[in-house]
Length: 224
Image 1 (tube, rainbow, N blue to C red):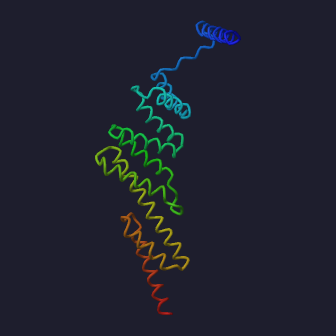
Image 2 (image 1 turned 90 degrees about the vertical axis):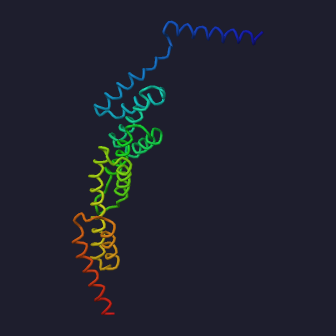
Image 3 (image 1 turned 180 degrees about the horizontal axis):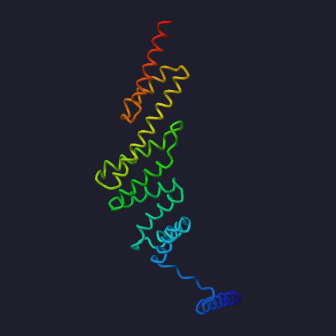
């Protein structure tokens, strides 16, 4: 009998809750349409409110994965990370887009942006050049796969900047070794520069420093 009473109480409670929803109390606010979310996301993006833009594009991707806005939302999600200087998240999002939509017409742009995520983090010539090397790799991949695309042409200019940075770095390190009287280490750096990078204005200096290294090593051998 007690069980029947409990069941009846639960049933009455459920009916009351249902009645509240009917009259507007406790009802769930209806989700925004993908169109509304896209409109809000693009508006926030244009205003520079990248956190709000991310939220809108994320909702489209999660709630409406089969809508006509879903793929574009994925792309704008990556762009929002990039514009918000969240570069690790941005490059991951661009890579996911390329992996999921390899034949999409935006792929050259996506590949270019992957390069830009590394390019914008390039260090000065006296620092580690990992990001420079990664950017160079990304831009060359784009140039190879889409040689005639507009973004491949833009990548060419950045490729030159990457190569210049790398060559200048080798010159800088070589000069450091030279000043420290580490002539063999210095000579190897200058030789590496000449054999791995095109002449972007460093060759004359590199050859001059190589001559100094060889002269110092020769005099050292003679003295010994």
